[in-house]
Image (cartoon, rainbow, N blue to C red; front, side):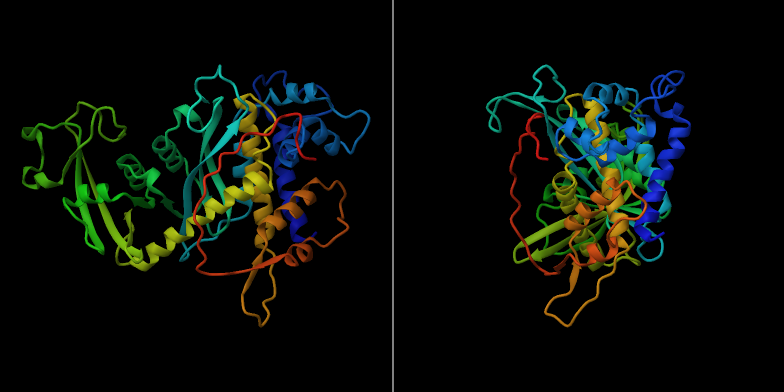
Length: 438
């Protein structure tokens, strides 16, 4: 058994183990998946993972090899409705455990945190996801917001929170993701400006984790008590967080300049609103120039004696990998091609795409390519590798008629350092259910 077959075997083994005792993953344990059906628990999970962005009927035909007794769309919906929301997240974690994450300096996991959005089928009757007509849309649109943890070195998704677009809360999501992080190694959570908040810093510290977050100038000025910021900063800010503005209850009256008041309607889980408790927060503040006249601010709890400013600059640069992973997740693997209007079913498909992404990433990470004496070093074409792996996971036989490692290794791209492009935001409406690509 070669390595790609081993990876597929591990995934299918976990699905088989779950299908032997599906009670923990179904809504009605005494009845669901207890009778013989054309689409039992294991086949349902495999179909959700391997389906493409075509119509549901076409994807079912491909899964059943165009057999006359292919499961109908209605039967598929009845089966998927039996699943609890924990089934696919549990499978993602079980699969990840088989293949340890790559570590930095022997003990750290570089974990990028970021959010992404999915435009879903229009439904004005759902106030939690519907955005009324405005500057972005003449008819209005519906949207889900997702927040991910992504291991940069292993190129794998670790966890996800899915929220209705109108109720999105990235601060709450990152705190929940930090609390339930359960992989070996010490995580360094690397996030952009959307994750800069006291609550996240405190949650990471309480869990023995580290963080590196970009912040706006106004936040750094407030932390350091400065009217203007110099071109370079690498210093400490020791803050005392409180819910009470009365000076007579302060436990450290000699450190008045370090107190920061947290309003009662701002989430901070370690000081209750109305209490006189205080929370000590020690942060490392960095300000660096990235090009002429352009500066970035970073907030972290990484120690100065182990991580230099250049290390932190490189960490944040590596965070961009999660942005490119969204492209492969949505477009190469078809996560944008959702097959339902129901939020419950859409959630299933997003988790299934994360599992497929990780399956492709594990296989691709084991493929080595030979470097020749050329102008550029070369890397695997990850998008093409994912398409190859997607075809491989669908293959029903035991011996594929091709060498997967050789096929992936033959599709390469040159590594061109220092290339930058302006980021363009282009809204994309969901494809109609009846007019999907094959």
